[in-house]
Length: 409
Image 1 (cartoon, rainbow, N blue to C red):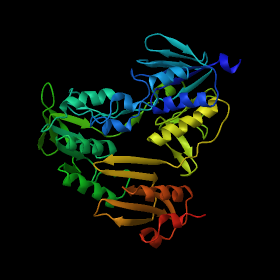
Image 2 (cartoon, rainbow, N blue to C red; image 1 turned 45 degrees about the vertical axis):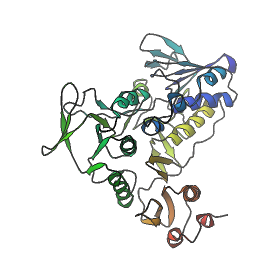
Image 3 (cartoon, helix red, strand yellow; image 1 turned 90 degrees about the vertical axis):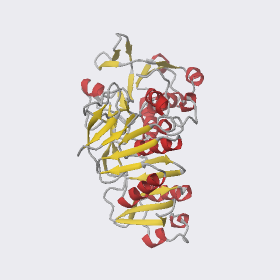
Image 4 (cartoon, helix red, strand yellow; image 1 turned 90 degrees about the horizontal axis):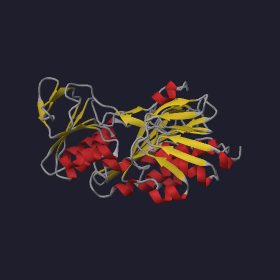
């Protein structure tokens, strides 16, 4: 079969799916590309949902990974409101819930994940919301008026970003975190304490180590009930407690799944005609020396490009160093690497101010870094972490020594 006569189907029209489709064309693939999305929207970026889009600073079209006209120009058939019910690997077809079916020569799974929700009494009320999709933000926006009371459950990136925007919009904000500190899964106590201070100074009622028993109010929640009986008034509740990878479709099709769809360094699944990329995958990381499932835009885009190369018969291993970012108030947090297992922590700058860099070393080598409103430091930290460079901790901490001087030639 010639390239032009083949059909490649992509299940999942998020950022990874959009990137994969565009990359296939860049690589010269001339066949049919069908992009199936469960939402009605063409591929869009999720990070701005809890930031610029919620704040009203950009329109929906500003979220799009690729504009509709460009999608049509490169010959990608987008099918929205398309929930895939099953994959028939033997017949090489995907079947939608509405009965339609699409045959494929190669298949890509970029199914992403869905927001975890609470199962507590009252959690099903209409004003208990996630913040994962355009539709979620559209449900939240009517409540975003000065004086309204928002209770945010979860002190991770989504929760804190939403809190920052809500304060900017004049809402009364309460953040409830079950762990002893915010951002506990991604950073050290010193950095957590910095962000807790920033939010409290901005007027957020931020509470850690709290347990929630349920919600009261009918038909909408009016109070969040804590263990011990305290009740916090709420006009709206946002739940930001993590993501569940969408692996059910792959698992039902008999693909290997283990905390994500299992892929190799080329984004190849256990089926030679199926690749997968993004939040839904568990991939080997040369950088970490182990398998990992990452939830980040960088991972989604770069792994999608690797998956496209595999589909196009031009495999190139995915070996990216993970990095993340978060915007809160006037601050930009940028993180590279994963700090778990570090044995030395070094700060450059003042944790009591509003800009600093934090470095994590293991056996004398730099494995991760956090930079708050220090983009230049972050740029050089990325290079050092990617090289697993041996760095003198004293020089890392000394602001008179430019970080660029520490990057080996």
